Length: 332
View 1 (cartoon, rainbow, N blue to C red):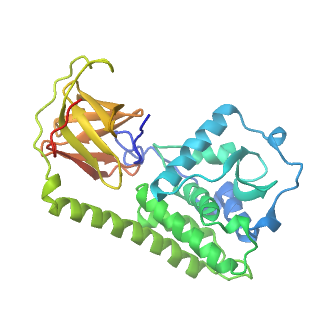
View 2 (cartoon, helix red, strand yellow):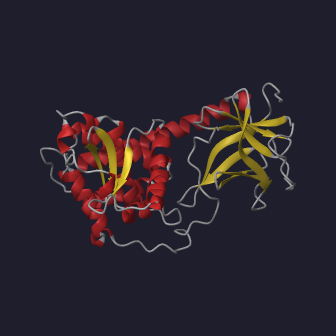
């Protein structure tokens, strides 16, 4: 089955916007400080592998912990456009760490720390930056070789973290505030100093926004994907998967290589020669939009001009695609 490649967020008022989030001051956040300090002392590469006896029997997390962790890590990997090349192991011994065990790349994580990353209502960008940094070490190949340039590896992982956080909706302040408060100012033999690492995070964040701006500019100047005006949708029973239907419009999601179509049965399908159910068309949740695209327990809103929006954890609406006419017409 095809699935959406974009990171999706529920359309709801941000708890942060409503003043409901009460973050622990960074200076008093011992778990986050421990995560950053461990990152400062850990040297990536095969030499950093855990004892060979370490295995599944040492895990302290439940199946739910692992499922939650995988969902959050997949968010990070998805926006990078790369594939997940490691496994997850729950342990109370570390907030988060990229390691190699018996030749297998793994992410060790504390379920309590990962729960902070998973809080969509009050996103913990500091915790997310730690996870993204560790994932960046694996995706960058830093953990499978003895590093001859540890500073370069760390700056690459920092840049990856900044890129990921931008794509997930963090402001530049969100992406850098924890590192600016917690990372040591002075460099060490294995880690650059605070100023250089903040520059790397900032560069990754700016690169993500430049890429996004380019996607939007290209889409708006491409006459083939001009948004199609939409009418207010009145919900009706969605047809079954086996019912014959025709595509009535196409949906393009920026950065997603797959094609999506809206059929006359109020279904959203992915198409690769055959249609695969992705989501459904539903009534809009506010009068500002024409209809709602529901998929994977989340929602997109489509406005009357044909533009598709999602609401980021920060509460900000972001344009992520368009609904356009069929080019060429298609049916099945």
